[in-house]
Amino acid sequence: MTRHGRRPEATTLTVWQVVELARHANRPYSLDYIRRLAPDFIELHGDRLSADDPALVGGVGTWHGRTTVFLGHQKGRSLKERVARNWGMMHPEGYRKAIRLANHAAKFGFPIISLIDTPGAYPGAGAEERGIAAAIAKAIMDWFRIPVPIVAAVIGEGGSGGALGMGVADRVIMLENSIYSVASPEAAASIVWRDNSRKVEAAEQLQLTSRDLLAMGVVEEVVTEPEGGAHLDFDAAARALDEALVRHLQPLLAQPAPDLLQHRYERFRYIDSLIHAEPHFGPKID
Amino acid sequence: MELAKTHSEVRIAGAKLPPITLPTNCPGCGVGLDPEVLRKHTYVCDCGHHFRLGADAWIALVADRGSWKERWGDVRSHDLLNWKVPKSYQSTIDQLAEDGLNEAVRTGTCTLGGRAIWLAAFDFRFIGGTLSIVAGERLARGMEQAAASGLPYLLVSASGGARMQEGVLALMQMAKVNAAVGRVHAAGVPFFSVLTDPTFGGTAASLALLADINIAEPGAAIGFTGPRVIKQATYADLPAGFQSAEFQLARGQVDIVVSRTELRRLLVHLLEMYP
Image (cartoon, rainbow over all chains, first blue to last red; front, side, top):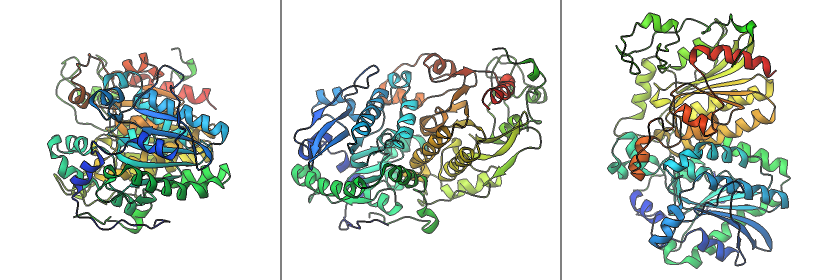
C-alpha cells in the first residue's frame, strides 16, 4: 500500500499518549523544521486582501539547491507567542495567504512543502464573520489546480478541515507521533457524546494515529521519529523529515503538470478505495 | 426580483410533498399548525418559518413530477472503524435503513421546468446529514457526470459536517468532493447551491458555498463552527441572527435569500439564463 513501506517498530504507547506527544509543548514546530531544511528561509506575509495570519507561516527558501515555497501552521512556544500565533489555528486570511503563495509558486515553478500542525481552524466569531467555511472550501478546491509538486507533512496535530485546507497535496506523509483526524478528540467527544471529557474514548475510536492512516491508505509514509519523540532531538527529527520529503518530492519534479494534476485528483477521488478490499482497518495500537 | 411572466405558472412544488414530522405549534409564531395546509405551502408557515425537509421532500419539491431517476441508491455505508461507543455505528445505519432512510445524500437526475439537471439533496435526519464516504461518492460521481454531460448541477444542503464515525476518511470526502466541484467549474457547467437549515462544518467548508450561485433559505443557520462550540471555545456572546442566511448574505457568502415558496420559480428562471 505504501511505495516506501518503512514501518516504525511496534510501540507500546496508548492512543492517548500519541495524542499527547503530537501536542507536546516542546515538540518542534514548523519554523523549527523550515529553518533546518532551508537556512536562508525568507518569510512572506499577507493574503493581499486584508491581513496576515500569524498562525500560518509561508515563504521561500533554498532546499537541496532549489527555491521552494514553504507553508506551515505555527504554534507558539511561550504563552505570549501562543496567543500571537493563535495556537496555530488559522483564520480565513491564512487560507487566502496559502493560496496566494501557492499561485506564487506556480508562477515560478517552485515546489511546495506544507507542514501541518493545527488543532483546527479557529472556532471563533471573527473567523465566521469573515467566511472561514468558504475560505477553507475554496483553498481545498484551488489546491487541485496548482501545477507544481506539493508534498504535505503532518508534523503534529492534523485537526479537521483546518488541516485539510493545507493538506491537499501529491503526497502526504506523517511523522510517527502525529495525528490526523476528522475532528479533535475533544470535538468528536462533544459531538458524539455531547461531553468533551470522553476525549480518550473518542481518540481510540477515531483511528487517528500515523499508522492508522497509513493502513487506511490516506498517507503515503510514516516518518520514524527519534527515540522517545521528535521533541528530544530537533536536528534528528528534521533530518528524518528532510529525507522523506526528498524521497517523495524527487519523482514529482519530473512529472508534466497535467499528469501531476490528474494524479492529485485521483489521489483524493479514490482515497477511500481501500475500504472495498479491507472493510476493517488495523493495526490498532494497544 | 422580478421573474419572467412565462414562469408565473411554475408550481411551487414539482410533486406533492410527503408528510413530515411537525410540532403542534409553529416555533416562529406559535400558531397551531395544520399539516395539510402547510404541506401545500411547501412547509413554510405564514410567519415565514421554514420547516426542515428531508431528501425525499426536496426531490418532490424540485423535480418535475415523475422525472426523478435516483442513482447509486444501493451504495450503502458500513462501519469500517469498528465504532462501538456510545452507540454502534452499524446498528445506527441499520436502524435508519429500517426507517426507510437512505444515507445523508441522495442523488440522481430529473427535470426542473423541463430542463434536465443533476440533483443532490442532503437529509439531516440521517446522522445529521453528515458527509460520509457514500455521501461523498454520490456527490463526486454526480458532479463528474454533470461535468462530462453538461447538465447543470443543483445541490440542496442540510448537514452538520463530516461524519465522526467514519473518521479521517469522512474528512477526506471534502477534498474528494471539492476536486469534483473544480471539474464542474472547469467544464463551464452551472452549479447552483441551495443552503438550508442547518449547513455547517465540512459540508459548508466543501461544496455548499462553492456554487456559481449560493441561494439560502430565510433564517437557515449556515457556518463552519456551530454556536455551541464557539461559545465553549471562546466564551463569546453571539448576537441574535449570528450565522443566519441573512448574516451570510450581508457578509458576502450567499447571493440570494429566497423563500421556499419562490425557490422553484427562481431555479427555473436561472436555468433559462444559464444555458
